[in-house]
Length: 282
Image (cartoon, rainbow, N blue to C red; front, top):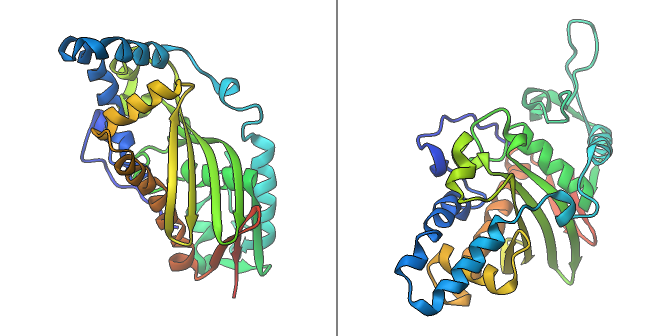
C-alpha cells in the first residue's frame, strides 16, 4: 500500500478522486438540479422536484444500517493483522512499534515490507473485518486520491459491509459508503449541495470474477427507485442503462486496482473465498 500525500491541484468540489470518479461531480450535479426544472420540459419538473425533496431529507447512520462498523470491529481487525505480521523495529523505550496509531489507522512506516516480520501464512478477513480494514487504510491516507487531509476519516468511511460472498468464482460485495458533505466543498458544502444535510450514503453492489466486473448498482441515501434512476441518468448524462452500469463498474475496477498493491508492495497474494477476503504468503 502506497502512502499518498499529494497536494490537490484542484479546489472545492473538484478534489481528485479515483474511488469513484462520479463523486467528483456529484456536488455540482445536485447544485444544478435546482435550476433544471426552469429549463426542463414541463413533464419533467415534478420528477426533479421529487428528487430534490428526497435528497434534502435528513438521513443518518441508523436509517442506513442496523449494525454499522464500530470500534470493536476495528479492534477485532487489528488483532487479526497483528497475528499475521508485526513490526520488527523498536522504539526508544524498547517497545515493539505498533502497526496502528491510537485512532486505529495503519502507520505506514511501521508496516512497510522491509519493516515487518511475517508471523502467519494467512490473514482471513470477514466482511466486518474488511470494512474496518478499509477504514484504517482511509484514515491513514492510503486510498489514493480520496482526500488530501490527515482528517480523511472525518469525511469518508465504510459504514457497513452488507454482503461478501464468493460462489463459483463470482464474488458479490455490497457496502455502504458514508460521505461527509464537507468532502465536496469544505465548510460551504451544505449550501452547495442545495440542502443535503450532514452525510450522503452510497449503497454499492457489485459482482466480479477476478479482475472482471460483471455488473454493479448504486443507490443514494434512501431515494425511491424512480428518483435514484433519475439521479444516475443525470450524473452520467445518459438514458442507456448499459452505459450507466459500465460507468458504475469502474468503481469496483478501481477498488480492485487498489488491492493490487497487496501484491506489488508486499508480494503477498490475495483472493476472495466463501465469505472471506484472504491475504496469504505463498
